[in-house]
Amino acid sequence: MLHYIHGIHSIEEHLKKAKGTLLVSRKKDRKSPLIFLANERQIPVRFVDDSELDRCCRHKKHKGFVFVTDKVLDLYVRDIDSFLQDSIGPNALVLLLDEITDPHNYGAILRTANLLNTDLVITTARKTARNADIISVTSSGADAHVHQAVVSNLTHGIEKLKKAGFWIYGADMDGKKIFELDFKGRVGIVLGSEGKGLKRLLRENCDDIATIPQLGDIDSYNVSVAAGILMYEVRRQQGFSLMQE
Image (cartoon, rainbow, N blue to C red; front, top):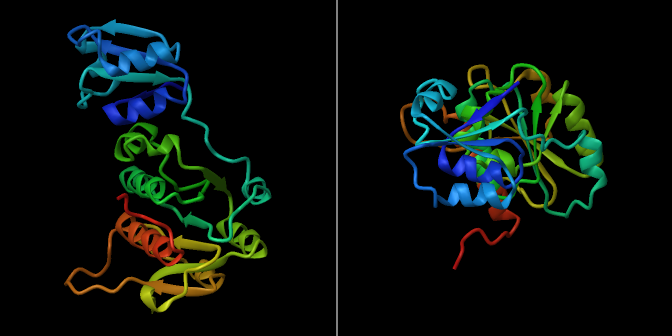
């Protein structure tokens, strides 16, 4: 199956790691940095009419470039076991996502996960967004860098992480405020689906429940926003230097 990656930043990140073909509008300058990068990576470049780019991207804003690859960048670790066999530091962060079906949300989560150097993102095999094009654009190419694992059962994944010394926190409105919790050490954060939230079985398998304080009138944070706040608070407590001088 062919995937058509558009968006300048997304294409740039995928060119660094994937194989495929870069389609370029005939109107574009031949000295474009993307063309230079493709040549450097020995990736074929084809100059085409804008109408072909429109067809590839279903008339989305391609800005004159489309990267075509025959598979989504396969950055998944084989399974959680292989991840745990690596040299994991004492302050590790794993994100577990249950049925995140909106590719925009999933892409936004991956973007923040990359910026905060999250060690692994685990998703369910079923009912999880897999639209590579939208995920790649929304994540600005972070999907080419974040390590991801797919499991059939998230509860089994939690059990394996616990055996490796992870403390698992579920995200829910009915829990302890995030600044009252100790996020040091190996931490796993579980987030439920956009509509249903955290499932009962997942909640029961968490060591504690974390809630993000809010002051406004809307009932809850968007899942990608909640994920970002939680990841940041974990890294802050773990003592990571998050700001560049």
